Length: 288
Image 1 (cartoon, rainbow, N blue to C red):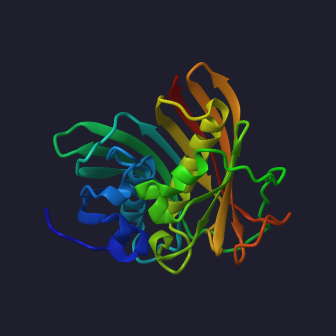
Image 2: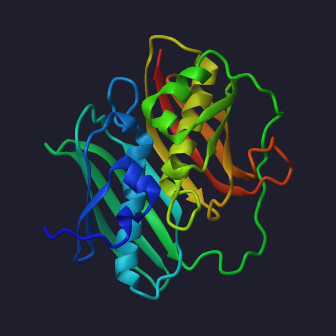
């Protein structure tokens, strides 16, 4: 396969992860992500946000190639991630296929696998070209009651390799709710200075997971994200993103958490006009 660039490796976020675009041809993109501890959870398992990011990056690559030079700013207006198994201390590769190209919308599917062919995740994306040309008003986050109780797991989350590298800080984590902030920084930036969509999705994933843990509390449990669906509503231009998570249902070991991601300026505390940039649902499993 021929080595190519096509802008995939131009963002600070993709470079921080170590993503390489190996091939882009015939409506397909192939990405490589060598193992590094900074992309992992404790125990060396690839963070779900990394796997999801490969789907977003691959989706943008095939959409940009299909639409051509006239493609405007690309936004992943819809994304669904199914987590099939864990990659522990392993390199992974992602293969993205363009399923359909419209005038401004492209549909893509990505499979993330280990080098031995073990399926890690499957990501479906819908990518739009030319969004935000006319901002007709943006929704604001519902937020929460403003409590600040990070609980016993809050400091632990900030110290994990992948979340620590993103600068995530838990402001609140109690009673099935979570609130986590993430600064822009070079490790989270896309091309043009906005947050990379992959970093936004990683924040959304982590916030939904922590809302689930905020119900059970810490323990010697096995846990993982089962699935994630999200929509990017606006380009995430802010100094800090804040994500609000709340568990809306639990059935045994399965938790459904709604998450809103909004922008803050200069790290200010919550205001009623926080612009909503992304929303989604995290399906999480904790085997107690």
